[in-house]
Length: 323
Ligand code: PBG
Image (cartoon, rainbow, N blue to C red; front, side, top):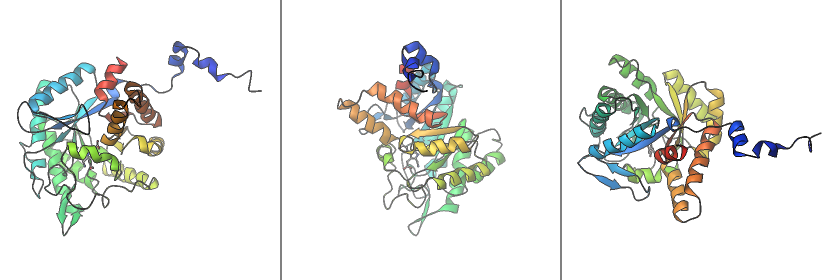
């Protein structure tokens, strides 16, 4: 006999009851803030499509990291914008590359702040593709060497976790071998295991100056139509030695997050990408959505789907809202 014996509204009747029965909790430690680092001094170059985000020179990056430490957020993920790009992505794995310099500065200032690095080539290649281009195609196996060198140089400079986002086959195994050979046995790999070829990366490509100069990324990033293939990608990365996995983007792919969390017993992250951020900001700036409530609801939905942690441009604001 359901109603009137059962009245679900009883458990919603006050803030204290709602707090008691809430199934999904948010905490600053679950948020990772993406940061863009560029050469120079005193640089803060706003990214027009991502209000509040900017390319930062190392001095300003350090200030931003101080705010992250004060707010207790889980960590930061670094994207480098090099002074010059070339066909070999040499800035990606240079010992004194922009990301490597930033890592050294941050590690020195904030030894406890978790430093994750995006391991990819698209910000460093003149053509903007994520790998070595041969006859107009991205050559998978030739790219693995670059990724390995990049990951090792990041670990050497102080990265706590390396996160390959290129979607080459076999990159996790190559990077694991490279790290182990170099003595970084304890540096975990967070694999962007299920990364879709998504229109939602548009604003990021302005931020990181990494738009492909010809073609698109559909020969390496996943088709948005595929879910079972995501499970296969994740399984392969785990076999190759990934310690943690990620689904990206987040809100349009909650079903993938859910399936991955039910299937794989490893830490799972989700990336609320630039386009997700910019859509919410645009609507808020128009007065169409309440910004703070949208931030909390979107992050809650991503966590509820099964993500343990979220890479989000809202990391600082969300932490402030939870304080
Ligand atoms: C690098 C990379 C991209 C993003 C993270 N790492 C861009 C791309 O694949 O084109 C996107 C992040 C975002 O949109 O916020 N390959």
